[in-house]
Image (cartoon, rainbow over all chains, first blue to last red; front, side, top):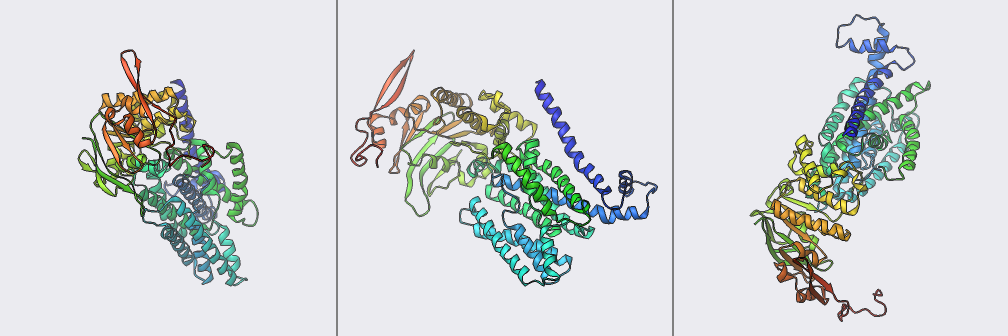
Amino acid sequence: MKRAVEKKGVNIALIVALVALPIIALFASLTLGRYEISLGSAFSILTSRILPIEPTWTEIEETVVFQIRLPRVLMAMLAGAGLSIAGASFQGLFQNPLVSPHILGVAAGAGFGAALGILIGGPAAIIQLFAFAFGITAIFGAYMISRTRMGSSLLMLVLAGMIIGAFFTALISLVKYVADPEEQLPTIVFWLMGSMAGASYKDLLWGAPPIFIGSSILLLLRWRINVLSLSEEEAQSLGINVQWLRWIVIIASTMITAAVVSLCGIVGWIGLVIPHVGRMLVGPNHKVLLPACVSIGASYLLLVDNVARAATAAEIPISILTALIGAPFFVYLLRRTGGKWA
Amino acid sequence: MIIEVKNAEFGYDGRGSVFEDVGFSVGEGEILSILGPNGCGKTTLLKCINALLKLRKGEVLIEGKRVNSLRKSDVGKKIGYVPQSHGSTFPYSVLEIVLMGRAPHLGLFSSPSAKDVEIAKEAIEMLGISHLMNRPYSQTSGGEAQLVLIARALAAEPIALLLDEPTSHLDLKNQMVILSFLEKLGENEGIAIIMTTHFPDHALSISHKALLLSNKGNGMVGNTGDVITEDNLRDIFGLDVRIISVKDGENSIKTVVPLRKGSFDRKQKLKGGIYNS
């Protein structure tokens, strides 16, 4: 009995930590950058929008916090949370901890959409719209390929996703090949490597809703994902409509991934690694794991983006950093767990 | 009747039927055992009963209603299914696994409530595995794992239980533990039980009815003692057996002894070594 109480105590501490982590990360990140802003004024500037506080800060500070840093910080957190929750859901759905939200070719599709948008010289809005639309197209293609009379099996779906991914990757190469090497090609290359630079409220205004909606659906379904992670027959015998539930999860995750790619390019490793960190902290139960992933993912990508923007004078593409950190960490996980992921 | 199967025929697409014209019924507290050689369709039949698979002909009735007309969640509420094995990628705890048995009672967007946890814990207690509650399922022994899966099926508070070879991978003691539990479950809770088994002894020991499925696809059903006879077993398995009684105090236990001599009929006789096919 005493042990149970103790365990609960630890759990509460963990919950508090997971709630506090992204909030602390948010305020700390607002102070980072070439223009120095103290934690106190960052906090006051933010709260002044809700509470009437006499300004003790300069107008420049307010502009830096509100117009430059906050949208970028929010975008990083949104993307990190979204990719992590989509990754955890996909790993549950595919009963495979090596799956990332990009497995069904969504990222390749969205990447092609963006490259195409850049090629035709469209404005940012067109690029984002293309990215989102082609991300959705990719998943639709995977669905059509995997569809059989009996519904689609997971194996068919993964294979279809690989095919779609390869197809769109080839199309991306084609776009790069025909793009103007002076102007368009570098833009495409940098865009595909992912970056939060240039984040604005306008981006968030249309990019955040799909991420919010997708994440909310996954959070609502989070306990059912446990059942979905059993074999198909077991899940069915527990009264679950597996085909239907599976597609709700896929569509919700796709909305998130496509929106993230359209906002900040292809950011790898987050959706793969963060769910593992979550499982190490709170266990495999998706009811707890998914909210934990939101917290850890948001904080982690924010941290990485801080390095990307503030570590050197030049901006470092974010996917380089996530891979450089993610790959060794994955090696550590692999060695530690012997591939059992427990 | 809780479960009725009428003129059931099943076959995979474009192939001949696995079984045909199979019919039986199982009432409250009754136990039916399904026996037959490998590949005769025991598991398939079980899956047709809870609508995991669809019959080609005939029908399955649950409390008089066609199983295919019921919603999936309603089938899940009424029929608990205990698969032969369970494999999960993720190391869920025993309690989390059993709690999943509540899924048919929960809405799409809901998580188990305190009451669901209570019901799951009761099921765990009923099987006497409370000490395993927080252990990862993957770290339980074969016997314990089987008990966990039965607890999960019972957590749905079903009126019928389907078990796919519940005693297959267990040691002698655990086989008896499961059998006694199932017998009590029928007697005390009135749950209708259908199980497949490779052990005629187990059918003789607890089941009221038995269904013998042959490789030719037809079945023989009736009271266990009438169906499991030396003649019928020889016909179905192509093997000579003797059924003898062993005294255990006041009870006498019937047991089936297979005779190895003449195990291979002409068609199956193997040339060279036994394993050289």
